[in-house]
Amino acid sequence: MAPPNHYCFFSTIFLFLFLLSFSPTSAILPKVNVRLPVTPSKPVKRVCKGDTIDRNFCLQVLTTPEAVAVKDPTKLGTLIMQLGAANGKATLDAYNEMIKKPGSPQTLKALNSCVEAYKYAIQSFKMVSTELVDDPMTANYDVSILAPEITNCEKALTDAKVEAPRLYDGNRFIKYYIAMGSRITSILEDQSNQNNY
Image: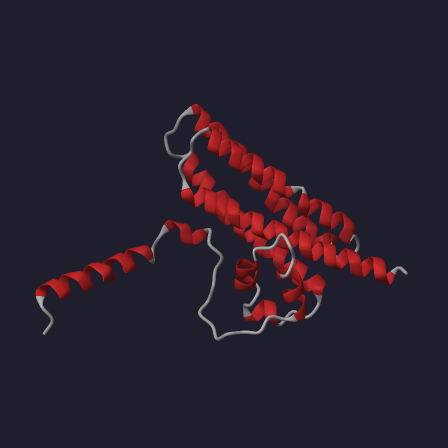
């Protein structure tokens, strides 16, 4: 039988891990299922090797069975846009939740600014999905202009001294999806240009 100190120590660790599993940030983090190691497809490898891409994040979200099965870059682009919109929606929900809490006028103004940025981002991710086939150049522009919106949101939060790591995590993740969206639309634009010659 373990001495009482060991029992308390292990009980404390178990309780800590159990409580962490219900952390409210899980709504913003990308959903990752436990899975066997999967080799990324060629389109995934091309997207994830971009200079502005967080490679670990990219491979984490694009080595799901659904993403690995995609061999067509256009379909991969659609999947990235769907993931970006879903992440944006989860983060928007976190902002709306935060707005309900009492805060200073500066905090409320910053949060409302971010809510508008996220509404725009979600709408743009959905719109870009429809542009991927017919107009990858416009799709690239539409996804790329989202980054300044999120940067302005972050600046507003910082200026208002909003302390909400969950929101900053959501901003970081949406920027990763924007970078991945820019990369896949650039790839599609290059393919379109090659097909026209």
